[in-house]
Length: 135
Image 1: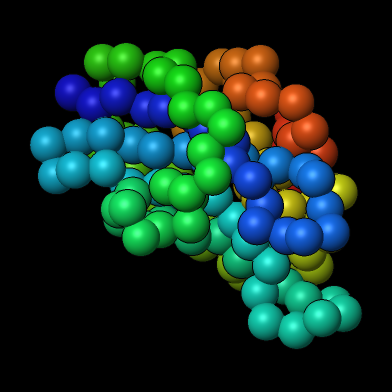
Image 2: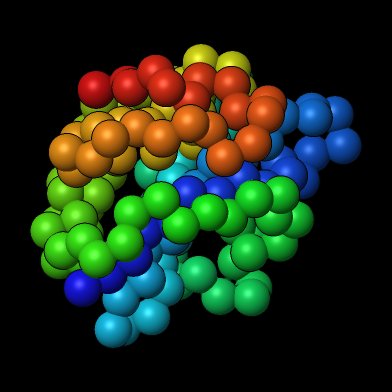
């Protein structure tokens, strides 16, 4: 069985005071983080989803404002398969990143809902787009 956390961290931007939402799946293999980010380019940059090792070096591990366990004793294999399928759907949809409306917080909302989980309250304030699925 696995545990799923929802978190928020500073955006690492000197201009914006909004937060970056992410999910952390903890299972027998370790901890993985899932979210979305802006792809390459300034204008019209794509929204890209990601799965990565939740290590000390990963940006989601730095500047954390909140990291809350929201789902315990879940089927980690089923959640992982759902998250990967959803991230692939985000990729092929070719959505354009927008800091307020199509961003990491809409990605995590979509991941949660498509996995059949109940959407919890946001882990912190200033998560624009949270609660709004993109697929």
